[in-house]
Length: 438
Image (cartoon, rainbow, N blue to C red; front, side, top):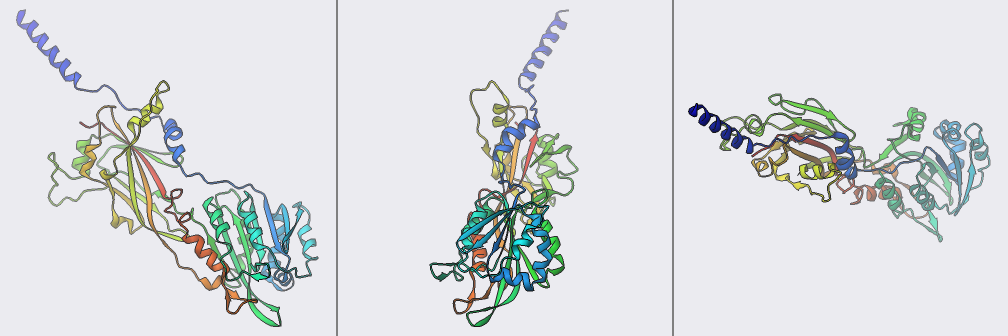
């Protein structure tokens, strides 16, 4: 009996000591809370446009010639009133505003009255109005901007409003049509511009209707150029975690959430291909922890480099999830625990590898680790385009009018517009829940 008591107490003490070293806490992640408290406050937010559309017409030879001679303009003309809620006639520096009812044919009636060329059209004022608004717009003009008896066809005067519109995450379609104009005793090769200010994320952007009407003329009579910095995207393309691991996956609004059930010893062995001493297995290259994320080429930019910004947000998440908590916690930067496979990047794929530094950042304090991975664009290349599309023979100065082409180039190269800027550079986010580690 005495021996049995000794055995019982010895066993009990061993169990208590063993359990004292174990954490009974299991990290549970509430995805709606993760969305609301962690992801949403940091997500890129684009400004939204209303469904209203303003039609700007340059009361000049450009539109007079279009009405009389352009098959492109006359293909669009019956629909301009259907697309637009307001008409603004640019009469030099004065804008005449005409409310439109889409069921009538007011635009056609107004076009019949445009018979006189009114000089000194303030095109800059028109574009600034558009880009400072939250409405879609169509501008039909030759982009000749004269002020104080000076023509600005050598100046990139549209750079700033173009930049402002793109910084909001919107899109500009620039449709060009060549035509001849008699002016100042000569014939000039000029360009007519149909510029569409819109946002392709809208349910029914005006560009869809316009481009549908223009489709028979594209690459024949007209050229279409899309100016945008918000079209670089990434998406899952297959299983994101190696089959040797047990995991679950859920796609949320703006991010993916992955739970890996295996412990970190399994990850070290099967993914990192390291033995228990941290030495690599001979002739067994490591595998990506996260894979099968693909990204596109944009209309104007190509991604040439990217990095992963990683944070252990376990303490931060728990502090935000506790309604009684009086203190906040900061995320811990653990970026040197991850690396992007540069070879896969050349094929527009994102594969994420682990480094042995990851073990410096894992904890057993909270019953698991919650890690945030942001994939960040660090370098882009500008896609080439035909600059001559936007250049015409200047009526007022020797040589070519380069104002539109230089405005486009300036906008695309601006530090606040390129997709490496702070409001565009995160292309994809993954939240990863793993086991504890000690």
